[in-house]
Image (cartoon, rainbow over all chains, first blue to last red; front, side, top):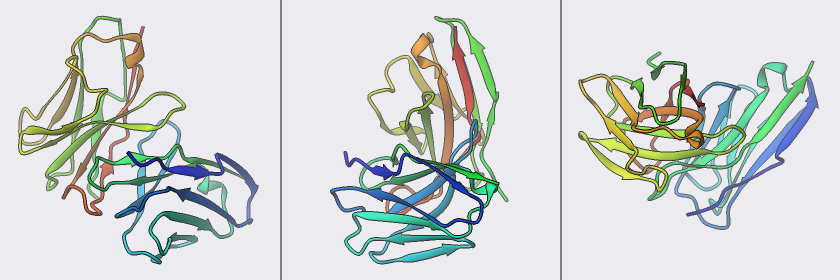
Length: 109
Length: 115
């Protein structure tokens, strides 16, 4: 089973700042997904990336899939308090969905 | 927008009791899943279900667990004799396809507390 390493584990920033969180593995992903989870709720799918080098944008969120498909990043521009939550990456190759431990983001107004 | 629903939102039970957690997946989805998240830990896969049978299960999914799709809409997880360590959030998910970049949609979860 591939291990997904997410960094940083915790991030606390001021409203309006930019940030990037990372998801890495030593193995190649066939596809990767990013989820956001709020306390007491289920993960909510944000995006799926499939092609190496792919960049997808979702409003102020930019997702990038590494050229070698071993890593991915999530960049948030001008973070808002509503962005607070646990950001999870997950992959599914020939196995069921496997999640990383996540980055817990706190955006302070 | 279609969504996965789960009931109850919170279940408290005594050790040794049976519990049934219920899920209504998105209506045109074909694959159904249960995951577990112990407080402060990763979301972990339990079982996947397709065409009225289990397609894959993890080591966590032992003989105490079972899943069923009793009718065309509900998908249930039964824990026969609950243990303290079964306390966790249980998430149901569904997807249109399996593997290969498919997208799973999660329900809001059931918080199971075993005392």
